[in-house]
Length: 371
Image 1 (cartoon, rainbow, N blue to C red):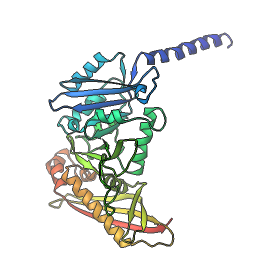
Image 2 (image 1 turned 90 degrees about the horizontal axis):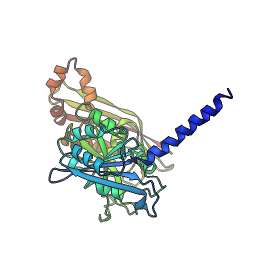
Image 3 (image 1 turned 45 degrees about the vertical axis):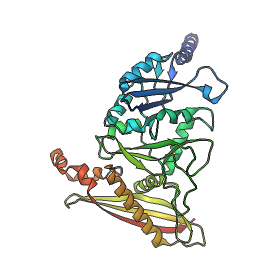
Image 4 (image 1 turned 180 degrees about the vertical axis):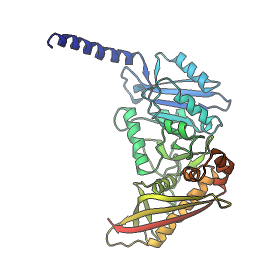
């Protein structure tokens, strides 16, 4: 045993010595951005930590970009222009500008990104208003020093509260055009803080990224969702609409409402909603029954009927909005397809058009309790 110990120590030395050297010879990509240009060209950029430390925030990360007539050409040029091989195994974010996200080849673009060597397909996908490059440039680790850790914590926080989806690149490639639930991607934007003070009668959460009523040194916002129609991004949802979707799915942390007397109620889901799809009617009927609980301060009794009716109206408006975007973001298709025995029967229905023209029925059962 003693004779093997020096050999084991020597192997350990070789193993620990090679890894840092390999990392120094590669660029560890943390953020990948894709922008479509008016000319039809595509610009791809990557953000990676510098091996040498700089003095300012901008010196900590190196950004390299390239443009080509297609995504593949842009990536080829990017590889040719970078001083080190690109390592995509640590990518935390895939940021896609709205121009590229609304093109008919959006699904193909996601597949091409996923096909990059050693790409981390569990990376979050953000569809941003304006240019993805501008969003990436404005994104800095204000809390902490590592952008990768800051990004994961921030996105997890917003998704956990219910204001954004948590769709990864794996999810998008799997579901866009192939699944029975259209993927919703994180909506991002850079806020220039030029919006006026909001109307106090309007729901504060009923806003999209880029227009939140706030002031901060951090201009980057992720709030709401980019909806897809089986082909591309077809429109946006607000943070409040995403919170309602999470409520229907059975989990939401930060949904608050007020009754006419100003009494605040924190709404939580008791369990996932009951969903029914009647495909034998013409038009078909989508039914949702939501079970939730309203928590309020002791000594204050909210108007239960008002809050219940408000939730029913808002969820019905949300479903109508999704239908107008041709987006089955809640996954009614997963319920409808179970009623068909063959693929031919399912395809004969023409689910997309049937869904968009369907009648909807929403019932909310709200119970109240003191905190």
